[in-house]
Each structure stands twice: as structure tokens, then as C-alpha cells.
Length: 267
Length: 348
Image (tube, rainbow over all chains, first blue to last red):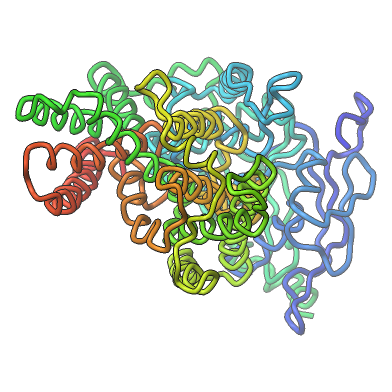
């Protein structure tokens, strides 16, 4: 369970250790290891089919690795479902957001984890709406994006605001790590910038973010570190400031490794 | 790092301003209160009938209208829950008839004295409620386990229950039921509130509370709005759907008992074709067949639109068959207004 981290520990929050995943003869991931430290934003990039989604789904508990382990605060964890991962404090924000558009903002944030009235009414399943509205408003405040009334149905929100609601859901549940899979894929330029701010606000809470994106300028603008996957292997893991966008693209397409250590990748 | 602005003043770009904000508030209000249109229609109907026929506001007219509405109200309540989950239940009318006749047969089998006692009554009532719930469970089970569409499954159980109504008693009505049922069915408290109407009102209030104030209700909207999202959020979607169809079956059985009380017998004709009126009542009341939207209040108003048309047309001397024509027109109008409103207000 969460909340057992010793303060000031140097242990990375999440360690992915030698994770591989095969589907029959196809190797989706081969021996991938990387760490995510507190308050760090890690960009996970790669071409289509490089293994990003598989890796994200393993961290989110939706897929089990063929071999290798995950550690949280240095302790090995095994997720058998997305619910397990969520119990360990890993919240995933999916590309399609998974919001119920007819429900109000507060209801979306608390769906599946509703607060009930105390006593007999609670046992009958009666909702404590004021408590949920109050906590939802506070959680949204922490994302730095205002959405007007907490009673607005999500259908009438913009793409960026919906993203904020999905992230607020992660923040309110005191999550340890936020996974964002292509959060800006469906958004306009202005909204993309808003999501960038949102990720900054999450980092400011000390919560690390793993960001999967195809948008290289954004990845370089937001991320502290960039991990590049190429054909299921990690080929780059560097401080974002030490790389140019061209470096990253070269790494994604495999151009940069053809000379030096292509043998180890194609082996 | 310039993208991160902790003071967040540029957030204003995401907020609608001035007129846009007002329009959004209005939009949200209207999309949430689809039943307002229906209330307006009901008001117009009442005014017209009231003007054309002074008898429309009489006690006899109220008693006829309200007792007639009981059937559509109870079926409409269950249908509202089902429609909010983006489903449909075509079997409610047939369950009404089947549960009613099963309950009546149990009562008849147990009766030893002519009048019958509370024991037989209770046994029959329980048998009817269990029958309705069981058919509802079958609906939910088939829909979630076999991944069949609600339309197909409930069309199947509609047919099966209709056949069952004729099979269980050889196509005969069951008239031998405890006297207390017929007595309760003809009793009006204070001369104005029939017992069946009172019982129905209690179910309406309970369902309204269940849908708007409880976890069950919230999850009902979520399941209809985005089943994948609800499932990711930890809602057991299939289990929830089974409960919804059971609730609809249970309420259909209650309707069967009310109809039995009103006529002091269980008829093989009871409930036939009622499903269309139940669906119409819910949809006129603002429930969306795409799921995620609908209210009990809307369905109550919708049921009264249907029943006021019947008594009203009879009172002004028009052939009651025009009621079906008028209900059809109002149904199409209500859905058209619903969609037009969404389009005009920019809601998808």
C-alpha cells in the first residue's frame, strides 16, 4: 500500500527492472530497465510498435510482463490488474480519458470511489454530494486549471478541461505516479500548452509523471529525462537538456545507433 | 519550462467569458432539465381539455386518469433506469401480465375459504414479485453473458412471457383471488387518492431517490454514458446491468399486481403492448435512448401526458384511437426538440 516511503530516501519511486514481454514469437519488449524519481517528468518515446504502449500497460497493471519486475520505493510489486496498480498509487490517464460525459465533474472524479453519507444512510448507498464536490474542487484547484462550476457536466468542457478533470482524478487519490498516454493527441495547439502546464503543476506536487507522446517539441519542453524505445529495447535514457530534438528523432528512427552499437539492438 | 506558469493567470484562456459563460449555464440547465418541455406539453393539454370540457377537472376524471396512469408509471420507472444505461426493455408489458397471472394462480391454489386471507394474498404477491424479478434477471444475464443486444433479448422474453400467460392457465383469466385485493383496488382514500395510486406514488419517490441520490443511481448514469470508462473506474458494469433489468422486472410485477387489484382478477390481456407506452413515457420525459440521461420526474410527467390524452379525448367526445396518434406525434416531437436543442446549444 501507499504512504510507506521513508522521507528523504534516495530510492527512485518506480524502478522498471529487466522487463520483457513476448506474445508468442513476437518480442514486444526486451530487457527494459529505467527509473522514475520523485517529481521527475520522464518522456517515453519511440516509433509506432516500439513497445511504448506495452510498457505503459505493464506499469499500469493492465498487462503482466513475461519476465522482469517492477519496484515501488525499492520494493518489488506484482500487479494482476489495473486496480492493483491503482491501489499502489499509480494512476493512468488514458488517451480517450474514460470520462462519463453525462456526469458532472465531481461525479467523474469520484466514480467508482464515491463518498457515502455516514451511518445508516451511507449503508443504504446514499451519496455525500457536498463532500465530493468540496474535495473535487480542491483537487481541481491543485491542477491549476479552472473549469468553472464543479457541477458542470463533462460534455460541455473543452478537451483541455477534460484532461484536467482526468488528471485531477489522479491527484485527488493521492497517487504516487501519473501515467499519461498521448494526452495531447486529440487537442489543439493552445490546449496542448495547457496540458504542459498541467504536468508542471503535477510535478510541483512532487508526483512524477511518465509521459508518452509523439509530440517531440512538447516532450523536450516538458520532460526532465527522455527514454527512447526502439524495437522493444531501450536505446536512449538521457537528461532532456543534453539532447536536441534532432538527437531524439535520430534515436527513435534508429539512425543514431546504426554506427555504434546496432549489433546489440538487432541481436 | 516557460510552459509552466505556477501563478496560472493564463488559465483564463480556458474559461468562457461573459455571454459565453451565461449561455453555457443556460445550456447546462436545459440539457439537465429535459422534462421542462414535457411539463409544458402537459400544461397545454390540461388547459385545452379543461377549456373544452368542464368535466375534465372533476373527481371522476382525476380518478380515471390517475388509476389509468399507474400502469404506465410503474413500467416507465423501470424503463427509465434501463434506458439511462443505453438499453431498452421490451418485455415489461409481458412481465406485467405473466407475473400477475402467476401470482393469481398461487393465490387461487391456496385459497380454502371463499374470501381468502392475508396468507394467500402475501404468497401470491411474493410469487408475482419473484416471477417478475426472475424474468428481469434472465434479461440481464443473457444481455451481459451472451453479449446480446437488449433489444433482441427482451424481444425474446416478451414473446416467451406472452406465451407463458396463456400456457399457465389454459388461456383463461384468473378471477378467484382474495377479496382484499379487489377491495384495495377500488378503495380511494378520502375519495381522491386510490390505494393503487398511493402505492405507485411511493415507488415513484423511492425510484427518484435511488436514481438521484445514491451510488446505484450515479453508476447507472455512468454505465450508460461510458461503459468502458465506468469499468476502468472500478464499476462492475455487468453486475450493475443485471440489477437494472431485475429492477425493471420487479416493477413490472408490481404493475401486474396493481392491474389485478383494479379489475379484481388477472387477465390474459393485461399488459399487452404496454412496453411501447412505457418507453414513450420515459423518452417524452427526457430519457435519451443513447443512454446517460433521464429522470424519474420526466417519466412521471411523460406518463401523465399519455393518460391525460386518453381521458381528455374521451371527455371531449373524440374517438380515443386518436390518443395513439397524438402520443406518437408527441414522441417524435419530444425527441426532435431534444436533438435540436443539443445542436443549437452546441452540445454533442
